Each structure stands twice: as C-alpha cells, then as structure tokens.
Amino acid sequence: MLNSESPVPDNSPGLPLMAAADLQDHLMVASNDLERLQRLLDDASETLSGHFYGASSQINELMQLVAALPGADQEAMQGAMQNLAGAITALQFHDMAIQLIAHTQKRLRSCADRIARDAMGEDDEDGSTIVEDGPGRPNPVTQDEMDAGSIELF
Image 1 (spheres, helix red, strand yellow):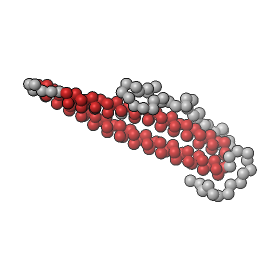
Image 2: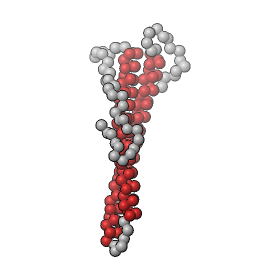
Image 3: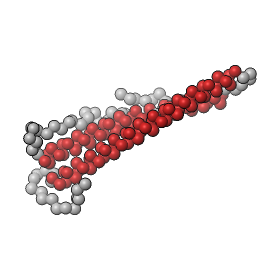
Image 4: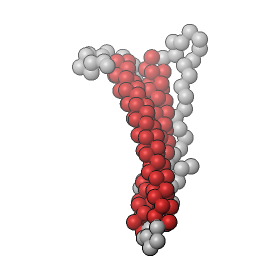
C-alpha cells in the first residue's frame, strides 16, 4: 500500500496519481477479502450440508425403527426433522451471500479499473484500457431475512 502521508503534486484537475493508486489498492484488497470470504462460505456451506443431510438420513432410519415398535411415539423424531429442515432452509443464506459477494466484487473491480484508467491515462501500447462495466442493478438479492419459503434467489 502507498503511504498516504507522502506529498503528492496536484497538477491535474482530477484525483492525484498517488491518491488514485492508493484508492485502487484499497479497492483491490477489499475485493480479495471478499473472494476469501466467498471461499470460506462455500466450505462452511458444503460441510453443513453434508452433516445436515447425514443427520436427516439417520433420523429417517430411526423413525422407521420407532414406527416398527408397538405403541411408539414418533412426535420427538418429527420435531427433530422439522428443526433439521429449518436448518437446511437457512443454508440458502449461502446462495444469497455468494450473489452479494460476486456483485460487490464486480463493482469494486470496475471502480478500481476506472480509477487506474482515469488517473494513469490511456498509455497502453495496445490501445485504450478496457474497463468492464460494473453491475447494472444496484443489488442482486432483495431478501434481508431468512424465513422458510421466503427465499428470492433470482
């Protein structure tokens, strides 16, 4: 990262080169942090899914065994299955979080590229610098809470 205390000559009407480079660095660090967060969420979601579906399968087997017993009460098992189904529904948080992270990453990278192009000029030997446009929509996910059956993914 660049030292923000170093003097920067301000001969241009826009953002000084050193400030632009520093801002670009911060945007790229934030984008890289979001990428790491996405990998962590992916790993946690995969692990949780495996455990939840394994537990669900075991509870179903136990429900079949209990059903075979004379006078057995399956109410506790059914309650456990409902709690587990709620936990699995909450895993859909992963889908929403990944969409938000990807959206924010794209926006940050677009801003960083635009800052670099504007601050450093069009000195690319191959032609003009290509800056990918940021996302058109302000937010890909409108959901802000998790309730069973209330997920909006697209």
